[in-house]
Every structure is written in C-alpha cells, then in structure tokens.
Length: 120
Image (tube, rainbow, N blue to C red; front, side):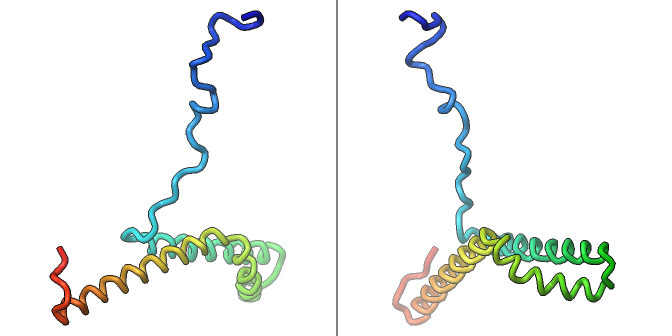
C-alpha cells in the first residue's frame, strides 16, 4: 500500500455519495391546491416581466401608457421562452385536476344510476 495514507479506507463512502442529490423530487401532480399554486406562479411571473419591461421603458423616457402597451406586447412571446417550465407545470396540474374531476363525475353518475356502491 505504498503511496496511501493510513487514514484511507476502501470501504468508506466517497465524497460524491455523501452529498445530497442535487435534483429534488418533483412535487406530486394533482394535489389539492397544486393548480392554484402553479397558476399564481405563472401569472405572477408574467406580471413581474411586464412590470420590469415597462419600468425599463419608462426609465428610457417613454410615457407610462405607451411603455405598458409595448411591455405587454413584448412580454407575450418573451414569456413563452422564459417561463417554459412554469407553463409545463401549469399544464400538468390542469391535466391532473381535469382527470380528477372526470373521475369524480363518473363515480357520481355511477352512484346516481345505482351501478356502484358509494365511495368512502
């Protein structure tokens, strides 16, 4: 064992295995309030983008109303690129909420027809 220090142990975990996983698990889709959170995040991000663009245009010297109109028009395509992840999350949450609503509606209709025992 030439060149190795006596403190080194082959069975010891490496530094890489001691670090936490850098990619956190995604939040469960379709949880109660998940759609509301995703919607608030997306709308809030878009409003912040419009406000930031309008603020820059006002600082450049444009009137506030003109700056707001330009900021709204510019932020539409820009938000498609910048907020792709938020849009995807919102779409997943919407799909999950829609599927849940369809399932509950089908269960209710089955109960009303007398096809299925009451859930719960």
